[in-house]
Length: 256
Image (cartoon, rainbow, N blue to C red):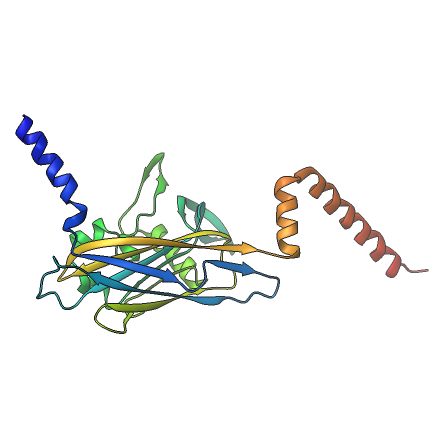
């Protein structure tokens, strides 16, 4: 028993030291400000693979997968059908705490980086990312070709909020890399987590994380903060402005 305990402690202590590579990364801007005339921008993620004495001598090439996740929220996808000439909602599926923004980038096609089993475990590619749904009272993810799941990803992709690109990461040298992170005009506000995963010869080597923040500034931030912190006052002011606008319109268009 004592020998087994000592062996376990030995493995735990040497675990971190056994890693032959580590990732050092950063983004070009850790705080993106959204103003009334914001139309989107692109951040740059750059970094390097740092080797040490334990790195195998025959390890020359690496693969990299970058996953960017925006703030999580509950969302709903609805199915519409044409009935008697009118489009109506006939069914829906609720997605629970899924990323409002999701981007996956790699230096080559995802299926060429690692095995399907590791890809599912590491959530490599949009088809492997966990998107929890409420299905008939249960909570689960479903097969990638599920109609609601496919429609949800398609709609988010059309808005530029979900994307994947197997050629977006560029290795400038065998260990130095970069990629762009496009942010559309309607990018959600909040903290964005960036996870960078390293592979070699199909095996998962390790990962590191960083983050950036998107915030509103100016009048938009003032309105959002007031609505959140002083809901009653915000509602009263909004109602008063609506009444005043209606009164002024009645004066302008009044017929004498």
